[in-house]
Length: 71
Image (cartoon, rainbow, N blue to C red):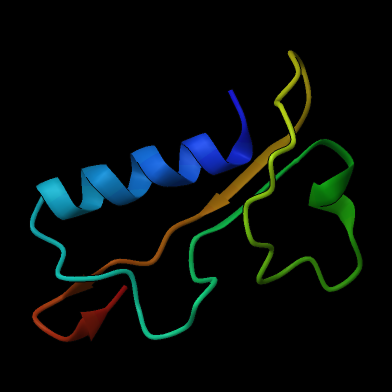
């Protein structure tokens, strides 16, 4: 599975649960795996097509919007 696939599944699940969006910024679903989790200033890490590998670290930071409230 790739980081992008995880982002897609997360967005689908948030919408299905009632979220009206995923925030105002283009890259608010932050997903990184492997060496990408340790990048300097590792915040706002948009998902890539990198495949996850067994035993690697995984960072997932999801932000959903519900009734104009950002999470």
